[in-house]
Image 1: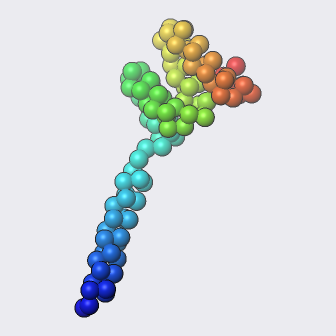
Image 2: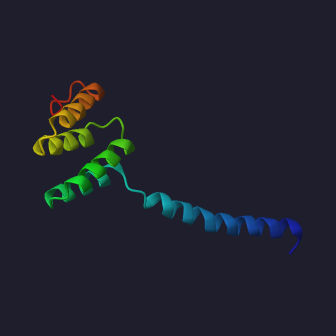
Length: 103
């Protein structure tokens, strides 16, 4: 094999190895929807701190979505953290003033 073919072969092998590894890493990353569902599951099981953390992560992953803020606000309201709930609902209204759930 000449040098040019050898380099092409090495590049092909490298790409063949790197692309699947990169794809695997990106496919395993949780989405905002995944975190929202995880938060709902934790809240249903009584793990309120864990649920708040998951809702916060969902909000970070999808900053234009009101759902994580509303879910977190509902949980805070149920736990009588009214200032925290109001802050979450207010932020949700700022993101989407037409969202009836945030109102």
